Length: 354
Ligand SMILES: NC(=O)c1ccc[n+]([C@@H]2O[C@H](COP(=O)([O-])OP(=O)(O)OC[C@H]3O[C@@H](n4cnc5c(N)ncnc54)[C@H](O)[C@@H]3O)[C@@H](O)[C@H]2O)c1
Image (cartoon, rainbow, N blue to C red; front, top):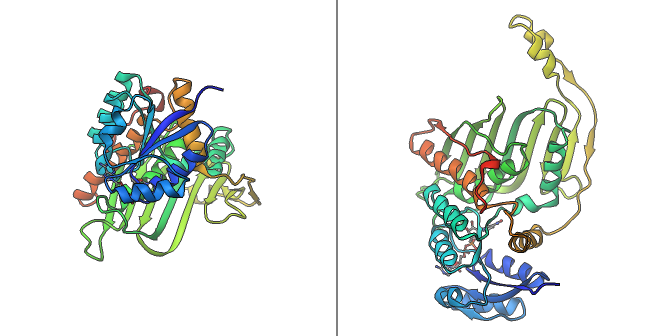
């Protein structure tokens, strides 16, 4: 077997320790350093994973020729500067979601990685859960037929991010999943965003995104930091079947619903007899078997495989950029009191190698 790749984790707050734990457990990686401007945090994480070199100086990490790659788990505002410096130092980069705090900065990162021939991966963790991978497989296999709608809810107590609102904190998960599972990616023609800040925190704590998709379907995302109940649920309606993903129900995380609307009779009907022609199918519900596996373990394996095989990772910088383009447009819509903002989307196949 080829040598382990050396990696440094930058940022040892909430998510950095999860990365460090999974990298330590991986046979692909050697956890070569943990770096945080707060050295005590770096030390605590190193202790928790059985020891690793720690530093508060990112420059020393980037200057180390033995380090192949870095994983960035700092707040979003710091992603761009760290990623650009790392790419310039010849390191492969995995960056936490969202890829960057603006589309312009994300574009620069993708371009720089491509110019340098380095892997730029975004940790869209949810795309590596067995349930989401199964959803993608079912949709690609035609189980749902044509997609009619996607409804997604991610709500819980939050307010943990100092630099981003609820859209930038939670919606990247929903958007990255949609981009991953829909056959042509998330091809939204526009996005309308409505947010509210009922506790006067200075940023949206509750948000709704409405996105008409190419082909007439509608996607909707609801995110909320103020909900005492936790919901992680996505419903994807199709002409044949409907898929329901309830991530908090381990007994029935993923179900295929047979009942649906007979769309073919709708499309054949004239305006006058449309109501009469609409019919609802009845049928059963099938729970799909999905294995229980930590997604982050697959994330770190994919990063190593993309480096070794010199290929685009499954959640590439380009995928991160597609999510950013929607978040950026959503911010524009929010500033314009919900007026939909048109989107010029890049097809998945047009993604840069990074
Ligand atoms: N993939 C997921 O499911 C998931 C889950 C949670 C958070 N995240 C992402 O992870 C990132 C970090 O989130 P968090 O909740 O861990 O944040 P956090 O604030 O808890 O931790 C960030 C850490 O980065 C350190 N830091 C900041 N700037 C730095 C710099 N220039 N150099 C070195 N260290 C620096 C801080 O001192 C802090 O310890 C965010 O982008 C967030 O969106 C991803």
